[in-house]
Amino acid sequence: MKKLFLVWFVLIGLFVSQAQTENGVALVMSEVKAGKGVEKILSLSDFSSQVKGTPFDTPVFFLGDIAGLLTKNAPEGFLSGKVAERQESTSKDYTVAIIAGAHANEIAGTLAAYWIIEHCRVSGGTLIVVPRANASAATWSISNAAAPILHYGARLSNLAHENGPDPDFFIPASALESFPALSGQEVRNLNRRYPGDPMGNRTSQTAYAITQLLMQNHVNAALDLHEASPGSSLAWSIITRPEYLDIAALAVLQIEEETGKSFHLESSREEFAGYSHWEWGKLGIRAFLVETLNPAQPSDDPTVDQIYNDKAPLAERIYIHLCTVKALVASAYEELGDLVALNIEGLPSSKEEVQKWLLGME
Image 1 (tube, rainbow, N blue to C red):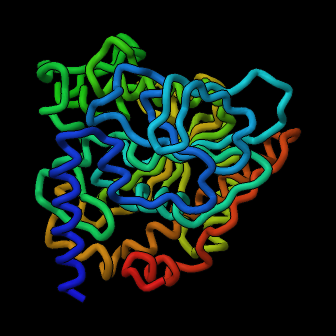
Image 2: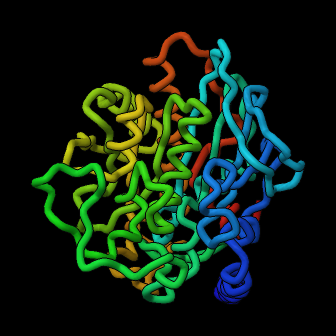
């Protein structure tokens, strides 16, 4: 088994080394294979051209009903042409976005997104999946930590990929005047840069492209998948704006019933300027940030056994993320009311099923 893991790590290192010289799309496509449920694959740069051809560009996977998508000059392969926009219509389709990998060291979210891409089929609506929201962050690590299937990256974008140096300090663009200044390196933290700026640094341009993706496709609900350290109060939590707490509360009951894991709720507020759950929510999107627990954080300890960890084994974290997706999709639909239900087939029935996938034993 140890030899198998070693082969994984070596292969992933080779993939990443090659992909760094190309763009983020190549990196992601080296890690995941689209299943039969994927109807189309575009690039994030189709929604904002500033990231095109950079390590920040990343695939966007569409599952389910894509009749409402107008794709101009988009070839059938994984690289698209100009623009993808949701047609203005009277469609009652329910559109959900799953965004993962904003922090590339929070691996369970990205792997949950990869499970959906490889295994799931969707009917009754559209599911948009971005497994590596910050592909640049996946190209480097502060500790050379490792994981199966994918490269264990870093919390921040790779400075070598940015279009300028870090400033001395940073304050999110939408923050109040009383907002305390953050460390300058936080300009490379994707989850501090929403709604983004097409004229900003590469990380901010990526945030802008993701916001455009959500808006152009009239997304009803968006989930941002993350992980927290064992000492963080955010571990095993769902964070959302006050107006969407009831949706999250119903989902928490379903998650606990299905997984036995108790989640707690956190209310988003002005202090979360630049965060996905606050900024996407301003746009009328039912936005939820989901946190599981990564035992290797906050230092990304490379000695932590992700597969067989006694606190939070990787398969369990992925399974819980996927159960959370199912619960929040259902709960948000009940609140929306008049849309056609979105059905996701192919989600795992147990953490053991996810474990077999991680070990290549399906």
